[in-house]
Image (tube, rainbow, N blue to C red; front, side, top):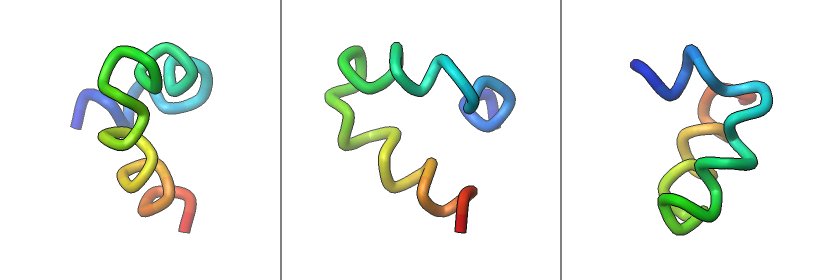
Length: 32
């Protein structure tokens, strides 16, 4: 929910914060 609203740039911030693995699959699901 919240992550989807901040997908464009914050993804780069979320990557290191959440270990990158937490956002990657979610981002790919949205992009796909």
